[in-house]
Amino acid sequence: MVKPSIVWFRDDLRLADNPALRAALDRDEPVIGLYVLDDESDGVRPLGGAARWWLHGSLASLGERLRERGSVLVLRRGRAAEIVPALVDEVGAGAVFWNRRYGGAERDIDTAVKSRLRDDGITAESFGGSLLHEPWTVRTGGDTPYAVFTPFWRAVQKLPAPRAPLPEPREVPGPGRHPRSDDLDDWRLLPTRPDWAGGLRDTWEPGEPAARARLREFLRDDLGDYDRSRDEPSGEATSRLSPRLRWGEVSPFQVWHEAVEHRGSGAHAESASRFLSELGWREFSWHTLFHFPELATKNWRGEFDTFPWPRLRPSHLRAWQQGRTGVALVDAGMRELWHTGYMHNRVRMVTASFLSKNLLIDWRRGEQWFWDTLVDADGASNPFNWQWIAGSGADAAPYFRVFNPQRQLERFDPHLEYVRRWAPEHAGDEPPEPIVDLADTRRQALDAYDSVKRAA
Ligand code: FAD
Image (cartoon, rainbow, N blue to C red; front, side):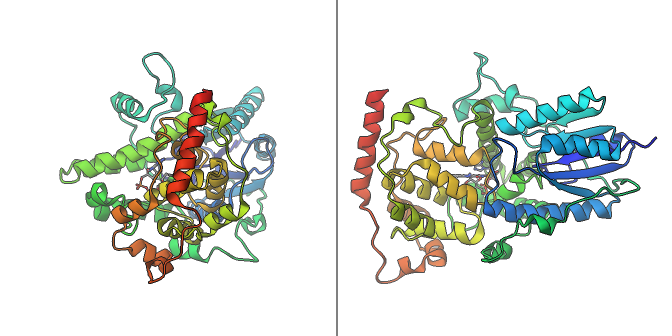
């Protein structure tokens, strides 16, 4: 009797280097792809607007690619812990495969699904597809998780090299009869009234083919200059692979091995090592989340719980969100974010520092805004980096490091190319005035921090 295998896609919207898909194909039974939009399970953070936009495009692409190869992507909405076993019953599946997720609530769901399926005699297996090293495999000499990046990265480099990527299957045999699927459009992931996604459409093409093309293009054209130019927001010298990695349209294994191949050519050695260490920050973010699942809501350093955040001034928060703070680099960055769903890393640091230190607004408000507006927003890198900037996080920049947005501008956008593109009024004769005094607010932030230190 035919017993199809289900591949439960999540943050791995690709056919190449997909260990769950490979395991299903190895069973020599028809394969059914499944994606569950789970906005009901406790603790699963609802996707932000920009992320929903991306998800729509990426699912459309994956569905089409599965169809071209003979199979199908079934879309269902609701609690994954109920939907996955229900589909198993409906199609008489013999096995379910997936690639692991690392957030606390997601792990709880996956564990529950696995044990329920196994109790019913169904094969249920999970694989590592989204991180180069499973978070529990990187431990200090004292057998604890790492809290500082440099020794973490040193330890990772001593581990066996990440496995080679798996090839893309040419055929994915589908079931004789297709199970019922929701219509992607009915999920309303795309904004209407107002349709604010024009800038996203102009900037990105979600889906695995575009992701792989960008990886090849970056390695060929941009990697050589990465080390020198990565901090300049106007140059577009970085890979822009973050949404691709977020949604798993490429795997870190593919990126890793292809970059290592380029490093081999000699000329790019420094740049390639630097680029690989950025993937290391991604790994470290997930390592931190795995061991501290409340990363998006709680200070990683408990002593920050006493931080005297002043009463919120909504007009300041709004000015920051809208890129109307009167500070050139901050305004340019916030508008790039709103328009494209992306912001250059250097500018993310400056805008985050400005919110949490000059405006003294709790980092969680900024994290939430980024969560809603970034196409690459992920459950680990976003809160990890926010806490890193705010000073409350793992391996955080010392609190007294307050980025000076003016100095950052002079260093990284000296000809105002980036500012002119996104906030041209700052490059004119009468640039706007900052809404707060940078020196005064820096001092206030340092005083507030001193009170945390005294309380600790
Ligand atoms: P590249 O320079 O080409 O780097 C290659 C890859 O390494 C990136 O695609 C990304 O996957 C990873 N990476 C690079 N820097 C970091 C970092 N600091 N932390 C974790 N991974 C990193 N990145 C996200 O992917 N999602 C987020 O939600 C996110 N939120 C952030 C919030 C703040 C306040 C800050 C300061 C940084 C945040 N970052 C986040 C990290 C970083 O800004 C982006 O990964 C980077 O700008 C993406 O551009 P790129 O792909 O061209 O990077």
